Image (cartoon, rainbow, N blue to C red; front, side, top):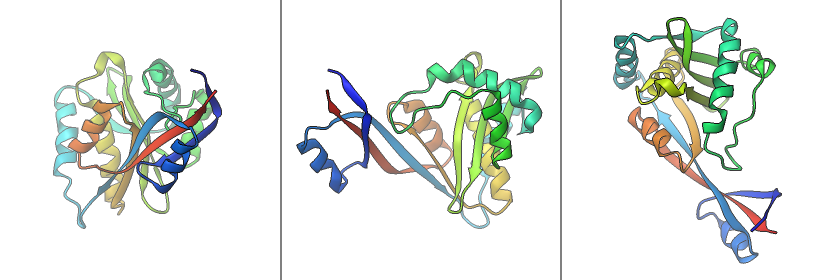
Length: 201
């Protein structure tokens, strides 16, 4: 069955438009979610600090990255691009070095895990009017399942929490169970579920 990707409708799970679209013949081609972390004031950063300490205890340097890391961030993203689960609502763009440098220019803050001078994990966060939103988090294949995604994301949250931010957002593809569990481990709760639908060809 072919799909007309130009006509993608993204609606909330059980939202009022869903029934109308399915009755019209649309089919689900992807599921995604949005989650929030709501910190107390003052914030309890115990879980976040534990993630940071666990990574450093295993020899990784966790720190905020400046634009001098753009080449390594670009290389890591290129290596991991095929591993991002795809939905029409969560498609990861191909980023060249110019795109990566634009992250800093546009106000994003990047936090990385470094091993012997090599970047092995990165998390990018952007401050919006409502909250701080994670743009993406990725880990080198050779360093996965060491909770480095948790560590770099925790570092980003801690930094913005210290600046007074109390609400954080993130999201992703429903099929990425590992990402959901990782975010729940550090206090995120899923508050939104979305379906992507299109009309069969």
